[in-house]
Image 1 (cartoon, helix red, strand yellow):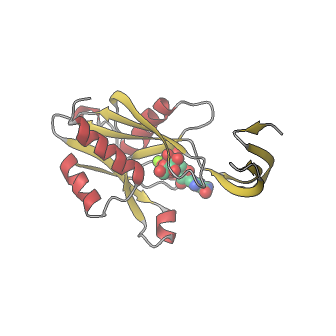
Image 2 (cartoon, rainbow, N blue to C red; image 1 turned 30 degrees about the vertical axis):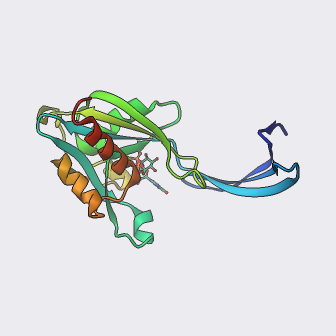
Image 3 (cartoon, rainbow, N blue to C red; image 1 turned 120 degrees about the vertical axis):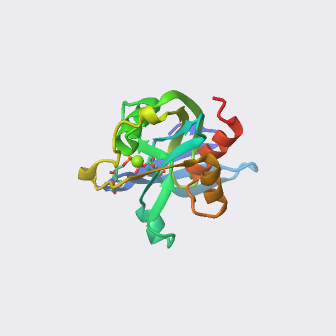
Length: 195
Ligand SMILES: Nc1nc2c(ncn2[C@@H]2O[C@H](COP(=O)(O)OP(=O)(O)O[C@H]3O[C@H](CO)[C@@H](O)[C@H](O)[C@@H]3O)[C@@H](O)[C@H]2O)c(=O)[nH]1
Ligand SMILES: [Mg+2]
């Protein structure tokens, strides 16, 4: 197999393919001293995804969602997480379209002035997930629906509107513990409504 930067992939085995794919990659690594090492790493393909934080600059508020997260529950962190609205980017779709659609579905909100801020690996030691993060603007008039998500897929999403300062206080108190959400709130604070 082809070598790239001293790494030669030997095999890729699918360990599980239920919702997302989990694979085991076996590869040879050439070390700086010229010796070779055979290694294995598991990769969980739970991505790509996209998330958006809508900000009403006039009123100084943001929209967030609160929903059941089983990984947090089994980790002992309670069952509901407060997050920026997010969704998986379906094959062939693009991240901007994903967040426009998720904002309608989960928050009942139209977005204006969508602005990409970052593309991030969220847990690169084990996960291939890359998240595309956006800020957007909204006004009260853009809140045209109930949101809530897709009941048929089990979603029961609560929409939260609060001042940006209150959301940040919830980061500091440990009530908001989702990485993409903390990063987006920090970006909104740094932008000071000027985006
Ligand atoms: N049947 C089944 N359904 C699942 C499973 N895992 C997720 N789902 C369903 O798949 C849908 C996914 O909803 P999205 O809004 O597209 O994604 P998300 O769960 O918000 O995930 C987003 O945020 C995650 C957390 O930050 C990201 O990890 C992810 O990439 C994405 O951006 C939800 O209805 C959820 O219940 C599963 O193992 N089995
Ligand atoms: Mg979602």
